[in-house]
Image (cartoon, rainbow, N blue to C red):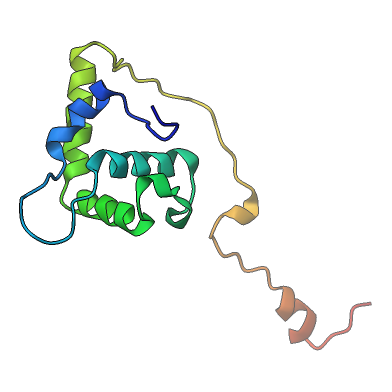
Length: 131
């Protein structure tokens, strides 16, 4: 097991059916789907830029393109729904809701309300000198 293998075999079995597979068409060789998905997970866990992704996951451009395509066609949403359903079925999700009643106050300058202060007009508009 590599230090970059982030998913167990059971976890991979849950999401593998939703991911693209080899089609048999000629062209570029198919990238290893598991390595690419683990690269996406690694990137989000570490909070790094795509370009800083370790080479063990393949070229960062490929990992980024897979993430972009899977997000665009709704694959990540399908995987999320399946994982939620499996966790709910196994009783691993508590659906209790908690409402917080704390008060957060903002500084007066944090608002976007304009107030006529008259600062410049008071100093320069009347032509009088302050005594």
